[in-house]
Structure formats: C-alpha cells, structure tokens
Image (cartoon, rainbow, N blue to C red; front, side, top):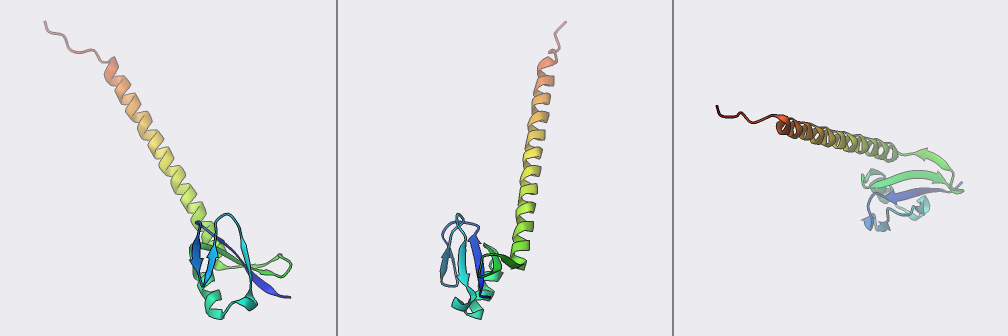
Length: 110
C-alpha cells in the first residue's frame, strides 16, 4: 500500500520543505514524492498538523505532531476560557464596587 502525509497548516500560506500549506484545506503528499529530510521537517514542524495515511485515505498512524497539536489546541482553549472568566469576574467585581460606592451616602456636615 502506498503511504502519504496528510498535512494542514495552522495558519494560511505556511511553507515548509518546498511546499505551501493552508489552514482551510488538507494536502496529501505521497511519501514517494518526499525525501526523508522533507518528511522529518514536515513532521517536526509545530505549525503543521501532520498524519501518515495509507493510499485510500484511511488513517494509518497518527504522528506525535498530531498529538502535540491536539494538546496545544486544548491548552490554548482552556487558557482562553480561563482568561475570559477572569475578565468577567473582574468586571463583575468592579461593577459591584461601583454600585457599593453609589449606595454610600456622603457624610453631611453638622
């Protein structure tokens, strides 16, 4: 069975190993069209999602790049959610503080 790399960039217009990749579409490159140096460079590139597939498009084995990309994506999502929650909490605290300041009556002179 012929093997290939299925590759998708994390950002548009990314180039590596003499090839251009996009974040909107996957690119299939037969291993027979690549040197070992190109294969190694593509699999090691953190800006690419790379998996090795068989000739009928079925997934043969995921690379460490896939696992690392999935983990990085999950971490980034969790960090973004935590940052959004922290921002919302701060805004709520600021709003409560402002409301408390508005309800206090100024001390009058006697």
